[in-house]
Length: 101
View 1: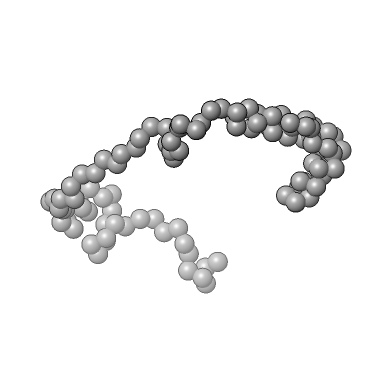
View 2: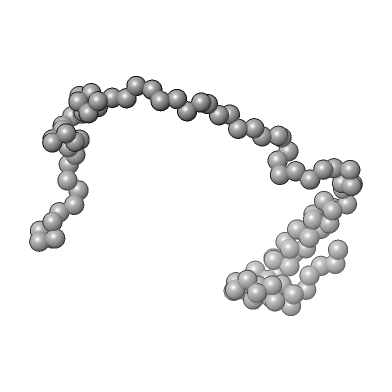
């Protein structure tokens, strides 16, 4: 595959809204050419008898039955809390009222 020119790299950078310095343009022209060569090699692989897949290994989901089990009462749930008030967990305040700010 032929190397890309600086003008082509500049054009691609403009399309991507990327500003490149002169040194970056030189480096990118070499790097993009290597990438295109690698893609060309991958395209040479014989794949006419290979079925397209989304994953190389078949995936299956493992589901369990959705069974309703015992639930805690409000008292049981709050029994291990460090502090509770009015049937709810009590936690330190992290917000102040507007007039205190």
